Image 1: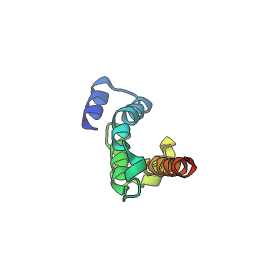
Image 2: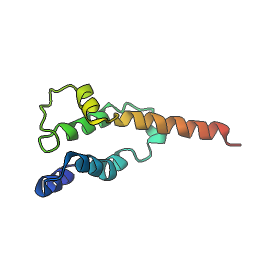
Image 3: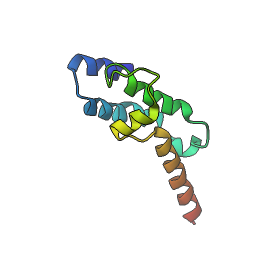
Image 4: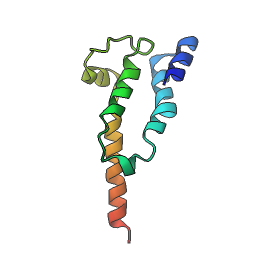
Length: 98
């Protein structure tokens, strides 16, 4: 995450590109195998995502800013939503497999 932030800061990238970099470089690693371990408590992953967005380089918000406001402003969903979706998709595949 900090490597992505450092590159974004050096290149003065727009917010959309920084979010895209997070999704392609960091979120994929965080979500790896989530269809198996997704039943666990995933609050830390959501906090990690919000922390990235709130850091001064991306939006320049205080850490006390409401996470709901951040998600709404950027049109994002928490990573836990993707995890729950992958768990349900995997479970449906298991049930429908002969």
